[in-house]
Amino acid sequence: MAAGKSAIRYVCYGAAKEVTGSCHLLECGGRRVLIDCGLFQGGREQDRENAKPFGFEPASIDVLLLTHAHLDHCGRIPKLVKEGFRGRILATAATRDLARIVMLDAASLQEEDARRAQRRSRRRGDLNGEPLYTLDDALHAMDFFSEPVAYDSEITILDGVRATFRDAGHILGSASILLKLDSGGCTCKVLFSGDLGNPGRPILRDPERAPAADYVVMETTYGDRPHRALPDSVDELYHAIKQTIDRGGNVIIPTFALERAQEILYYLHRGIQNGVLPAHTPVFMDSPMAISATDIFRRHPECFDEAFHQELRRGDPFAMSNLHFCRDTADSMAINHIQSGAIILAGSGMCTGGRVLHHLKHNLWRERCSIVFVGYAAEGSLARRIVDGAATVRIYGEDVRVKAQVWTINGFSAHADQPALLDWLGREKRQQVLLVHGEYERGMCAMEACLKQAGVSCRIPGRGEPIALATATAREPC
Image 1 (cartoon, rainbow, N blue to C red):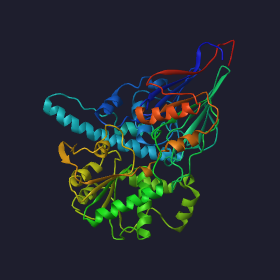
Image 2: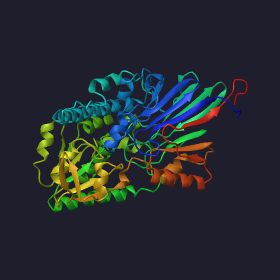
Image 3: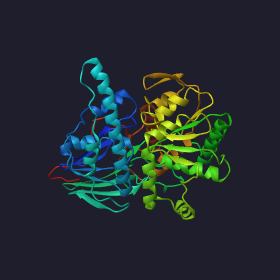
Image 4: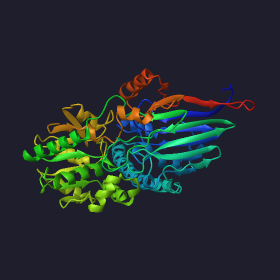
């Protein structure tokens, strides 16, 4: 390859040596493509990161490609638009539908947090506490979504930039994105894994394996370990529920609204149907976003596994006679009066906000109750502190003792584990694999060591670190 001016360049502006905030920039001959624009999640330090400048000018971005609708991948899009982005946003149909409810929910929480901060500020005599973005900002951001993209159909998104969305099997509509780049005769294929699903799930198809690409930007959330087998995890979930109900407590399941809530509903329905769980057990879905997401699931059967299609023909696998959907605040508050025998699914999954905080406040200190974590808990999050064994946690300004039994069942993860990541990557020859979206000292470093041992060239980008993927001069193209 001839030396000269960089023609194709990659910069990671989020999920660099960390799990959340996914945001990746590709520059190709003067054109700028952003892949994802997510929120940093975990605690106050991450909140401060969200408020900082992006590290690039939003107005300079020509197009944004969205891999999926989780908050840590789409949650800063309204801020991007607010600060000057006027390009197109491309995503699958299901991702577009889910992103709308995710961004609106995030905006509502931003406004609520800002009002709370403003009340505190007024008492101190200052005027801080503006939301990162508002509901109007989130609605405005939806205007920039183009017609939805179909899986496995190559499209030209800019001069010299072609994209193919491939099923990532992570959540409804999730995609890995293959980009074919051409700048002055210098060509390069770059594959973004997005978040990869765990094979063998009951609702969605398995991830499509990685195609040929010069560079692969790959997530490493569970790059350090395998998951527990899914059947064992389901059995443990049933055991945790039965044990808690037998001793007269409630089961609180902090739940991610997209995919995890629907999958847990599916297993609860199957457990009650098969007589493994008591038929009379009331189940509360206390998450307006999860309720809306469940409706969206029903509208996108194109994403389902064939076996799940067959189940749909026999009936609604999300429906139970004892299932209560709680959209209104009053319905949510009424659950707090239930002392025993209830299964409560509420967001957020990392306990960083949402209605689950109220349920934790009312049940975490009760020895008869159980808190069942079925998803990832980022460092700094309330969920992580509980999982790590904190004796006391602070919820809404009040110290709450952790006396309930805490269960961590990682077999439900929607992320591929280490063996699945390696299987997805395959043995195709790559120039380099760039590792992102993982805890640095666990997922990333473990995957780096694993790949290097297999003779695969890889690196871990730092935030804002430019990496030349291909270069060319005017006279000597690659």
